[in-house]
Amino acid sequence: MSMWINRIDTHILPINFQYHAPKTLEEALKLLAEYGDEAKILSGGTDLLVKMKQRLIEPRHIISLRNLTELRGIREVEGGIHIGAATKLREIERSQIIAERLPLLHEAVKAIGSIQIRNMGTIGGNLCNASPAADSAVALMALGAELHAQSIEGERIIPIENFFKGPGATALKPVELLTAIRIPPPPENYGWAFRKIGRTSLDIATVNAAVLLTLRGGRIDLCRIALGAVAPTPVRAVRAEEHLRGREPTPELIQEASELVVEDISPITDVRGTAEYRVEASKALVRDALNLSIERAGGGGR
Ligand SMILES: Cc1cc2nc3c(=O)[nH]c(=O)nc-3n(C[C@H](O)[C@H](O)[C@H](O)COP(=O)(O)OP(=O)(O)OC[C@H]3O[C@@H](n4cnc5c(N)ncnc54)[C@H](O)[C@@H]3O)c2cc1C
Image (cartoon, rainbow, N blue to C red; front, side, top):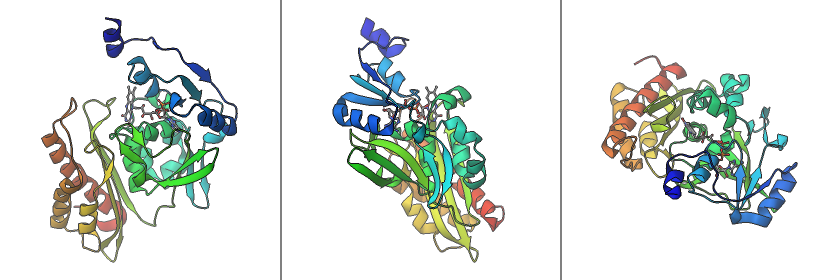
């Protein structure tokens, strides 16, 4: 009976664990090295605590990032824009740098949950939770982000395309911490769009999509299309991208490219929608997002 209640709704964390609140990154990495598989990082807790209450995970050690100010903040650096992994989603939403330089990310972050969730939740948590529907993930894929992972052995940089390994699984080793997200400087005059369908404004996506593109001489040049909630991980619609590159963005071409997204997705049926619905929604979202991106890139409305 108690197990059943725990799976439905409870305010109780039913397992014993040791709570650590390291004061420095070095201390946090040492704890991770010591406890590895038995430890879980606590950032905002909006995913982790739900899973612990449902007993989906039962870590013996919780390592909180709350004191690690070096993992927070947004700044322009030589290689682009740096966002600390423990930066709150609300801070990103309110950042002038993000609104001006990366409006695609601004819009995607604004679509996450509610203000309360964004006040607690962090960008690193959104990525490391590795939900196929994570809203920041599709935007960061379209933006070509790189993720910085650190352990006591040192740092490595993971292109976001290689980060997601399946629902809830990432390329991070148990001893590694995601420390930052680095977004390269966006190209001149780029067009962008973020689209999301959810059952309610508070729900995670049934399907989401992000597009970034540029035009050169009236033809599509750079083009990245990312989709979420339609495969075990967020995915790039590479066949559609290839079809568009170097070509004039006519309504027929946009339609053809939108149809091609089916080549890169493998949606399932779940409580949020059927696989068939997700296929049709993916095509429609990508078509809309492409049209808006072309307009924003100076290619005129369609
Ligand atoms: C009501 C509600 C609505 C929501 N709506 C949305 C939505 O619309 N869109 C959406 O995308 N998500 C949504 N979420 C999910 C969640 O809020 C986000 O994924 C959030 O960004 C998670 O961040 P966090 O800091 O709370 O992560 P946490 O819960 O602290 O951590 C999540 C996971 O990542 C790991 N982790 C966290 N930080 C690091 C790090 N730096 N290095 C290594 N591992 C780390 C943790 O160990 C844990 O496994 C919603 C959640 C709720 C409860």
